Amino acid sequence: MNDIILSHKRWQQIFDVQLIIALIITVLELITKKQRNFGNIFQLVFLILIVDLNFYVQFNRHNSSKLNFEITRWLNLLVFSSYFTIIWLVVGNYLIFNFRQFEILWVLLLWAAYLVLLLPLAILYAGDLRKWFLMLLAVYFLDQQYGPDVSLRISRNLRFLHSVTGQGVIAALALLIIACFLGKAWGCHFNPNLKFIKSRNFQISTFILLLAFATLDLFYNAFSVTDKQIWTAFFYFSSDIQAKYFTLPSLTSAIEPGILEETERYLMILIFLTGFKYARKWRLPIAVYASGILFGLSHAGNVGWNGETFSATIAQVIGVMGSGFLWAVLYLYTGKLWLPMLYHFLMDYLANLQSGWNSAGWTFSGYASDYIQEILMVGVPLVFTIWMMYGKRRAVIEENVDRLLNLKDSKFINKKVSRN
Image (cartoon, rainbow, N blue to C red):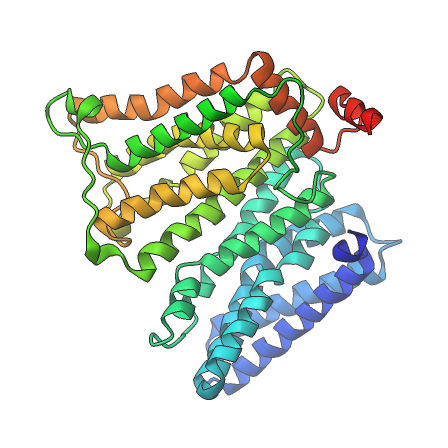
């Protein structure tokens, strides 16, 4: 594991090389431009100042003030989480455009680079944070790496490479890798796929009921249809799956949120559990419901996306919180992040197969049935997850939380170790 994590010095050296490469490419791009404006020159000057600040803090680390380091930390997270990906895009498009005969090779190499592009930045400047609200802010900055990758000019005849890149799947995997390393840096378990350890509190009936309820939630979200009549919010379902939507973009556009958004939830859960790890009574509900609320709020930017209205977006923000609560409990009860990823993927994929991947994500007409549907989508999973917070169900989750946080004083872990 130590060989994977590398030393702080080694990560710093890699980050310094990235700074120098970014600076060189920025200079070359400015030189080759026929027209230069104030914005280009200001960008270069600003970049030089940040690079200088980085090396000043490093070379004077024994004499440099804590304030200088904090300024450097947040400037790096704010600027380079997006700027490194822009440089990656510039280099990638140059190679693909000028050496088209090696396009497949370039894309594969660019994928490999993107998967680890922000790792040094994350480990050096987010990995040592311990206040939960600062960790949240750092993750928000690092998550801005999603976006430039979709503009890589891959030929459309390379359908798989084009769709996987253009739909953000590589960016989603990159965030998952960052999440694993950040979890380790924050003192948590490196792998989000915890090894199953059957405790005396584990009940197969609860596990089956949890999967059944997650499937019911999936079915209701994917196939419920409402109109003006109130009863349709309860009893009217329609599976309008169409053959024309069995396309590669429909698949990859569902894989992306399944990985990306569940990784974001995983990071939120880690942050809240770490921030409140010694408040055993409150750490679990805080992690589950705060991460679910943030999951809902993350959809607020969908206003106008392929025609989605403001009211529909508000409905989506509220409605998806229910699934957010449920999937958080699903992960913490099983320790398997791939399970909520699978449910999330299926929910989006089934929606894509009915209306196309580039359709508006949500609808809301303002009828009474729409409001009832919203209440059901949030309220029913909320009640179920509250039920999971008690008895042996809660005990199993707490055992997984202790393992996730590497808390060696867990009674359950000590018993397992003594038996072995």
